[in-house]
Amino acid sequence: MVSLKTAVRTRRLTSIAAKVAAVCVLALLLGFAGFVWRLPDRQVALDRNADGIVVLTGGTSRVTDALELLAARRGKRLLISGVNPGTTIADIAYEVPNYRRLLACCVDLDYSAINTLGNAVQTRLWASNHGFHSLIVVTSNYHMPRALAELGHQLPDIALIPYPVLPDRLRTEPWWSNGDTTRVVVSEYLKFLYAEARMRFESAPAQSGSRVDAGHI
Image (cartoon, rainbow, N blue to C red; front, side):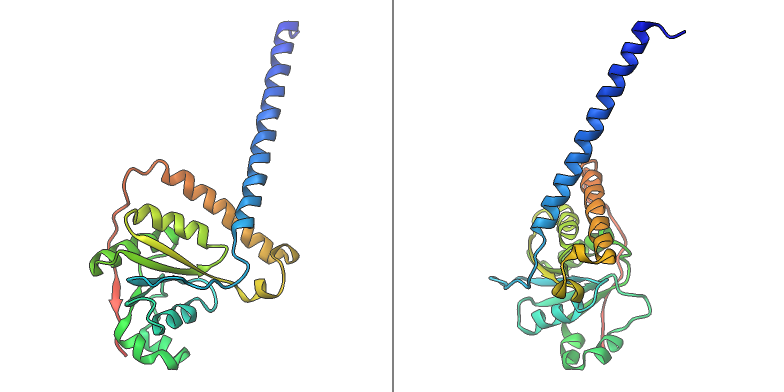
């Protein structure tokens, strides 16, 4: 038979655990609200140029927007990070023929990165090789917080200028009105939290081999 003292202790621990869980859930919800509130809901206008431009692949129109920035001389070179190993400069030029000359002279392809951490590591190597001190970062608006966190961890001495791209769906409807979009935003928030927690235990940027190609058509 359970003693009265044990029962009281168990009830007290259960109550404490429930309160801690409630506080954690509330913190997650408030954090998510802040995360969503900070997401840009329209295209931004850059107020400065940079040494280089990096675009993280994974969404429609990102590469085109980055090429437009390069054509406008917002940066000296462009890194397309996370390119499919079977994709070449010629393949990209076929899709955007107006930028063929720029692709031939001023664009590098990174085939190594398979996630956002990899994007950041390869960007660090690329920026170091070119002696860049500032970068325009092009990725989707919901991915930008995590991208900036990872890049900032790998490149603490380089100025990062965000250029968020709005996915086509978010241009016409709010994120909460579509189940697929909602899942993407929630998933990105959780990945952002994980990345922030992971980086607190990393004393130095991870080293990695590089495969960044200066492509020629």
